[in-house]
Image 1 (cartoon, rainbow, N blue to C red):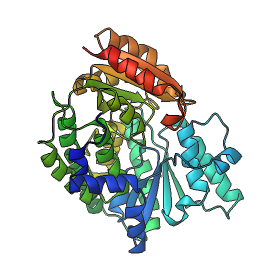
Image 2: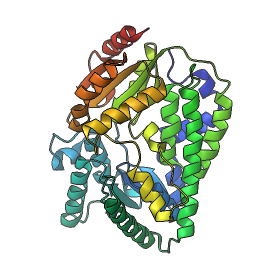
Image 3: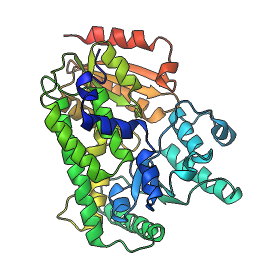
Length: 387
């Protein structure tokens, strides 16, 4: 059984990352107690660089697995995917009242756009609800110059809103410095990726999720320093034998799914969701002006299933799977999260034509442990993928 191993648990560096990954409000709580301001982020395309440039702490809004969905049931249709419903619940039930000061929402998925519209209307109609001040970032993801120009305008609007929230001007030098900080963090995470994707991996999928995901809840400079230290330590961790699995589909905000995969002899060597490898996919090009560098980064990252054509996703997944040296691909898609399932038939055909086995688990319940028989399905998939 792999998951998080003793070598990781015994590492003080990893322990600090795990602490921030597990107690996701600890750093922001201390940050606010010391007079800092925290910006919650819903959607994967809120530019951390601008938030950091404003002197504020960016943190990712996440789903609480055990929370009853009282507010979500009151306001949202049941056809909203379960993770979004749980995130919405946290935003309305008062959880974030003492944890974030502001909320930035990007149009990363169509359902998040609807959540923004619901939150905006609830805030207008029911001002007593503890919804923080909102800002919506309406990117265009088509890769054309005219859209890049428009996105620079959108980034400038977000910059102005952050200046209002922070109570100070954000200079180009501030943005360039913040972009450099985020680039350094992404470079550190690529060292972890190299160890994870080595011919004999040194990092498990569960450990990787902790290392990557902790960035969403802590100071980025500290994260960079810790990840660089850990990369040096992990180079001597035991090598891992197992079926090399690539995970695609719904984002995994916890290690639950990966624990099952690695329990039965798999090792997750990569993923293309936004709580994993896609987070550090592309740097800001510092030869551009600061705002253009940020727009370039968010426009030209690897294609997301939520904002791409099927042909683009087929090519993107093929490239990611080859880069990871994966032997098999698990498509794991939550119920009501339809976009990823549209890509599946063409992606399956392309992968299997090259000898890479696939398994599709569609319309999955949330959290992972609510799915009866999932253990056996994963065990059988890994057994069938050996060799």
